[in-house]
Image (cartoon, rainbow, N blue to C red; front, side, top):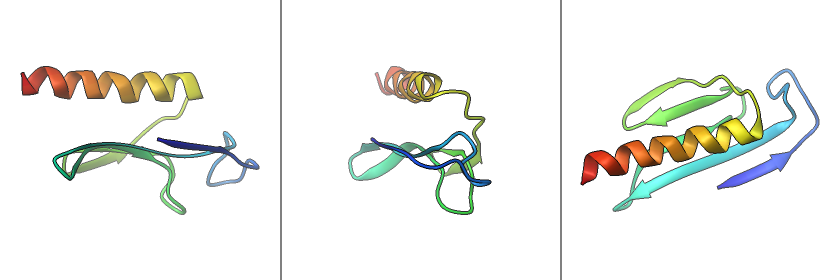
Length: 75
């Protein structure tokens, strides 16, 4: 997990750059990031979808909830 506070910009209006990833056996299972030019988005398996950033707390919550959901299905 990486989180930087940056100057707000059109690409990062909330003022944060972040990259959160959950890896299992060398494969990304879940990822949240806002790579340059791509905006806020989430990777879930092989799918990529827009993520609506609301706050840093909500970002952590959503990421951890996705991990819990994946781990529940692994059991």
